Length: 389
Image (cartoon, rainbow, N blue to C red; front, side, top):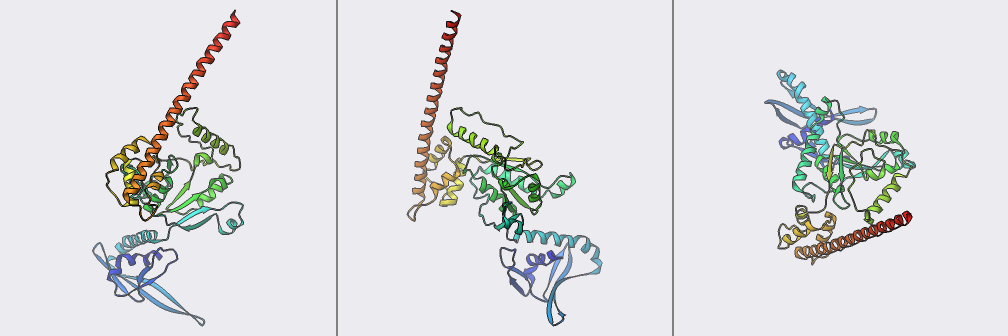
């Protein structure tokens, strides 16, 4: 019962006369526990029990070994309640405490041709220390609360998923322009749930069989991240395409890159069985509510005379939270909130000017295209009339 040694630490330490601290390999902080031969009292549903930590010396040839173990004492009258209810409670609480206090990891899948990956397993890891939270995430407040409620419902739904005979997993599709906080959202979710993160690089996965082995190699209560899923695979669930102007050079470039990636035949992965998305999260451009979060994060500022102008500009131009944050971040010790906010206003005004100029060029190209079509139509008509004559 390894979890029983964890449970008294948080629940009963305040009552112990002596404590000791030790480092733990998988914990992010020092671990406090009962001192040797110490005893503490717990009360559960009105029943008093006593936890005692005993130390026993064991002689094995000429080497002395020390064994530590917990004992649980209670009135025999309550045996049924203790064995059927209290022990389960202790184990459940212990697991939650261990999960919360462990050092969380960021895993990446090793390249399949790398000798090190053959030796050390399919995943390598480093400590996961990203500080992002939902409170610091630049996003609409109502949308954040909606996502948090969905995450809480899922995290507490183990019994429900078992009842309906479904795997206890949930797919989240994050989509939006670059710089809108998709990676930050993943970190915020991981910190909110206290989950590990597995960053799955599909371009190194040979086929579906290898993908299945990677998935089976992940631990419970973790997040598996697959980035740029629509560019990495010929994905079966296509998102609705936006109607863009044929002359939009940026969109044409994206389409060419997407075709090039889909024509790449090195990876034969289809994500069959893994690609269903239960919840779609659109990470959009920075609007006023998101800006206020960023201003608080970077400047510790919640109001300013420029807020009105900034709010108006943010409704007129499309800029990412990353671009807004770059302007808000002080560049020197002399940069105060006023300087940073004025720099943001200047940047937004420049973006507005670019937008106006781009729209003018688009209209001009559209007019030219229309004029060419009219001319061609007249030419075709003249040629047709010439043939009839």
